Amino acid sequence: VGKVKRENLYEMTRKYWVMNLERASRATHVCAVINGIVEAVYIPSKWFHSNEPEHEGRCMFIGTEEVKSDYIGKCVNSYYGHSSNPVRYINL
Image (tube, rainbow, N blue to C red; front, side):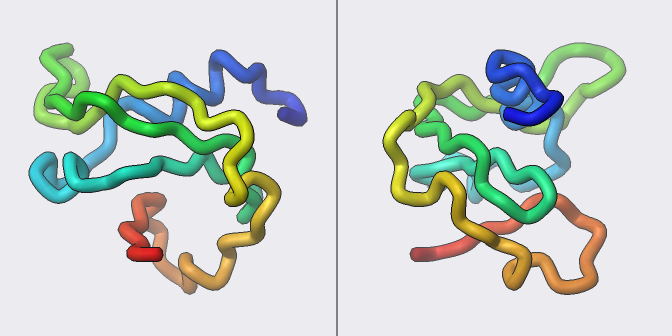
């Protein structure tokens, strides 16, 4: 994936999000987005709060990659608008 290694993409996508754990736990898919394009899709199996002191209370998940997802390659720019928050909950 461009300059990001696949294993790094998973780690960057799954960790340290400021979000509501209960709401995040209802997500069926998590997309890794770079420059508005979905580069990878993960199916979360477990959500939890980080216990690392520098990231205490931030959400993270463990999941598996959905390699053949229909979402890969799709542009999602229209979901972001002018917000600086990188987290979006989208019901599809």
